[in-house]
Amino acid sequence: MKDKVVLAFSGGLDTSYCAKYLSDVKNLDVYTAIANTGGFSAAELEIIEKKAYQLGALEHVALDVTNSYYENSIKYMIFGNVLRNNTYPISVSSERVFQAIAIIEYAKKIGAKYVAHGSTGAGNDQVRFDLTFQILAPEIEILTPTRDLELSRQEEIDYLKAHGVEADWKKMDYSINKGLWGTSVGGKETLKSNLTLPEEAYPSQLTATEEKEISIDFVKGELKAVDGVSYENPVDAINALEALASPYAIGRDMHIGDTIIGIKGRVGFEAAAPLIIIKAHQMLEKHTLTKWQQYWKEQLGNWYGMFLHEALYFEPVMRDIEKFLEHSQETVTGKVIIKLRPYHYILVGVESEHDLMRSEFGQYGEKNSAWTADDVKGFTKILSTSLKIHNSVNHSF
Image (cartoon, rainbow, N blue to C red):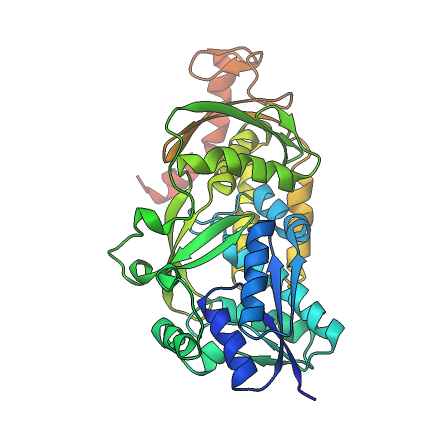
């Protein structure tokens, strides 16, 4: 009787190679599992299942982790306005741990001896998968053919061709990872510092050219309505916004960052809904939170994003940060008005009962209603005291 291996399978080049290799060379019963984080339609999942069986899988399952991914990660990334290096909404980085959790639970359920993934030895995902597997099931051995054999993409393609696998190899020039919180795109251009992705590399193409004004509504920091339509589940709201914004080719950029293993890396991405949500949420917070709430949220939001990226989701301090972020959203309720245009968007303004920009206290640069000129003179005199003492003693200026 053959040993069982569960392969984290996406249908891309790396995992296609792994499925064939583990079945034919390692002589294992291959069980493929795709953990869907919201990036695949029913039709796409059907195509992936068909491909898995063609590559020799004994059994294939689709594990939907979209709601879990939102509740345990995306929600807090919105609360924290998390953008790695002020650019990337941590799309793939954040979803890998939830895919790994689902896959290792499935492996335990069927009594698999091995679990496998198609990560290379030069990226972050190998650490994210390995670490999660080791924490949750240290007794299950991890197999990583692509990493262990140090294969190039062309070598994988040649192997599959030699074993009778037919595919659109041109499409496999780009590695595309799609989820609820954005799509990453890697290719030969992302390996160079002076190149960018061509238009055709992006899954969403520009089809909308007329400006469109929409609104999105937050309730205690969570997206609950898009363009006047309310949603009980924020996941549905995110998908609705993506459907409105992606035809404008909004949210494209190139992320340059430091990997967990120490090298610099580049990856292209498109994330129309995530970027709009984060920036709209941040604008609403500017109106509804105090400056110190915003300051400390920024610090902890950055740490939260860093720990997610570095595969440290299971670190207990993450639960502490989540509590802080959740409490900070008590007054973050209101509407944000947005204009969609080809390749970009404009945040017009907000409407909120919790808006702290109140004319009865004063209007910036126009008039003061809650204090007098003498009040300001006295306030400034007191505020300057410590600095006057320092300067008189040290003659700093």
